[in-house]
Image (cartoon, rainbow, N blue to C red; front, side):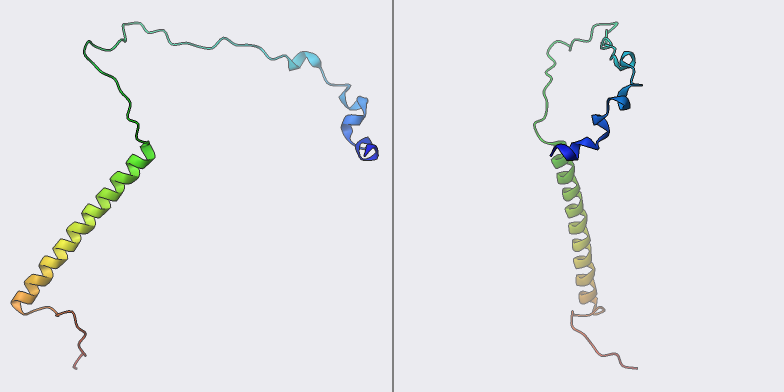
Length: 101
């Protein structure tokens, strides 16, 4: 095991002779805080609450409802068109017919 570690660059102390320890010092900066210039407390009687539902689930649910609403409107439009064609004697009855030339 020792023979494997001998060829690594960290084994030789000369590899780190140019390393300056003075530049590695991390400066501690004070965290910035927001100081409001006016009163930001909620109005009297105002109740602030958070919605426990996940935002992603909300978005997916509304998209699903919109697509199902659109598809149901298209289906009803198609049914109305087909029934109007059947009443007037136009349109097909849903069976295949051979084309006569």
